[in-house]
Image (tube, rainbow, N blue to C red; front, side, top):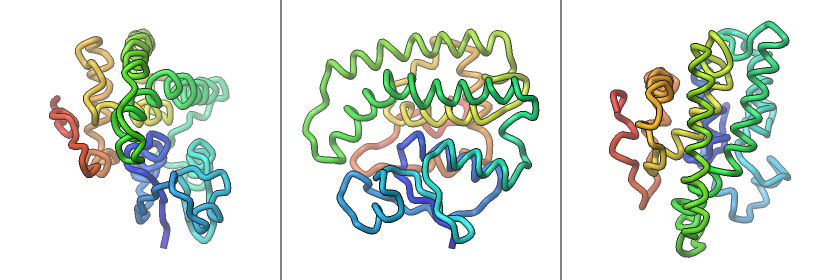
Length: 221
């Protein structure tokens, strides 16, 4: 049985889920409370992080490494372009969202809004929330600038860069922390991504004690 060990609101897990679904690779989703000590989990990934993918008898970790491995094993539909410079741009943006965006926005907002409650760590830190809400404006403006020049974030074709960005934004949209009125271009881009069949299971996610925002699963916002 192919399995993906994940946590529903983790953007890194969502990136892998979107890639698997887009390539029509069926897996069983196993929710993993990775912050709780578990010997079996650490054997699967000594780094103590999700996602972890068990596929065809092999175990894989690290979201970007998994997605690139899937691209090699299942090149159609392609999520990485063939041209080297185009692949570079996709990888640059994947690193941007998983690094800079996550550090400045996702980690601050999701940690305070959801993870503190789920992990039993107490009340949200309002300072972190304010910093995250301030930083996301800059990132949305950057996305708008990219989309003013391109059909998709990294070029003329949808790519892993789009799925990575959508993974982060969808997690934040669950807690209503994305101002979709800030940019019509970003809103239209997300509507296209959100409407893909690959997104269906993500839009069905529910975190006990944390209901999704009103527009979260609305394909027309």
